[in-house]
Length: 222
Length: 323
Image (cartoon, rainbow over all chains, first blue to last red; front, side, top):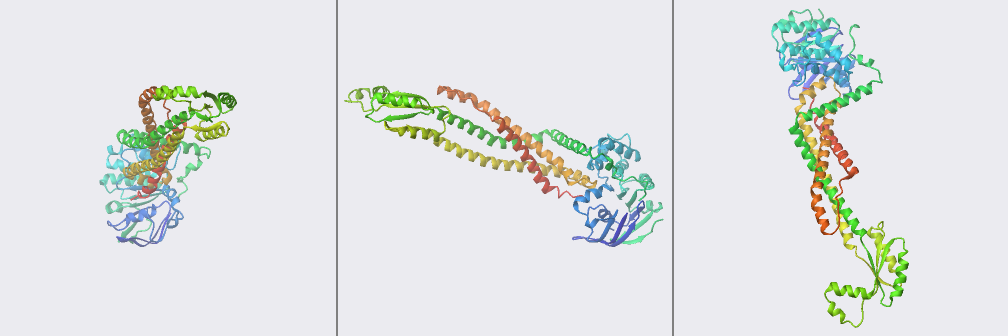
């Protein structure tokens, strides 16, 4: 599903954010990406989401070499990648339903199918009944669940999460991890960036550890 | 990837026949959505629309003014007459024969003969030299034929051709067509028309800038939304669309505002114009913009709104890349 081949990402001001990184993630696999702040976790996710392109090396996702993907195909690639953020990135003036529906609206889904899928996604994250609620009235954990529902509503084969439990207490963090495991069980490939070692160590999944932009440890598939 | 996972592209099962319907429904939704967005901010929207309306009303109003003056000058031409001053050796009998001949001319409505005695009498009563005139030993005035052209013959060039043609007759000493001032007036109107076109161009540029700047601010305000839409796979066209519709609405409402302003101005000045015309024993109902000019204003303002937003979106959306 994901293949990094000697990938380097260099920023003019900050220098190398990733250095000669190589790894593979199989389809349907769930893995954690860990490391201290500034280790390169977010940069790696940004390369997969095609928010940025590598300076050197190849990033191949779903058989596509992202470095050579034409700009007009970027939206299609992003529709196959669900993204979850630490700060949820919800639109405060839109209801929960409208926030979750965004990927389907962007992909021009028909009204009935859109309704069905949004309700199914909200059901998946136990937020059915909160469709008409504005995100600002929800707790942080609920907002993150809305973010997860939005990431999976179009049923992408790959979901990326950048510090999804960063703002949550341990109990809510475990609840969110439970949601990820449910997605993993239905075949979604998940790559989750987190520096919460306590949370990660409790879970039986592969962990990639970054330091200074380099991959220093890969536990392999457990 | 496990086969049990359903692909993100299940929507490929949507019948191709339904895709245009979905596309149109989306456009309608975006158009109404952007209209709703504008109506939810009535003050800001009203101010932008007012600026556009005033900018467009100025050239539109001047156009209406010039159009009315043009119609007025046409009516002046329609009342133009040609005076044929006959040679001194042409007597009344010959003059009547010439008048009868000219009356048969298809471009003439009426031919009036003014005898030398009649002319001298009129000169005496209007000039105030009545006493002096009676002292003249003989009448120095020739026979004059006043030609009234048909109403369809109103352009200065056509009137001049007719006068030249009449002048070729041996009994005619010279012909006088006093429409030179009308020609000058029309030349001034032509110049004013060019001026209005230039002013219209400059103000159209101003409308582009107003709409472009408003859309730029709109993009700034919705940067977060744009970034999220890009992250969830919206195409650039999809992201551009609401801003283009917003620009289109601004243009359309601005055009409507301009039309209303011009119509109001015409209603307000109709009274004084009618009173002025009455002093000259005539009537002059002001002509409005008419359907063609009205549609041009509305269509033009809509296009200006779309163009302004398109330019702004092209310039500023690229800067709203996801962070």
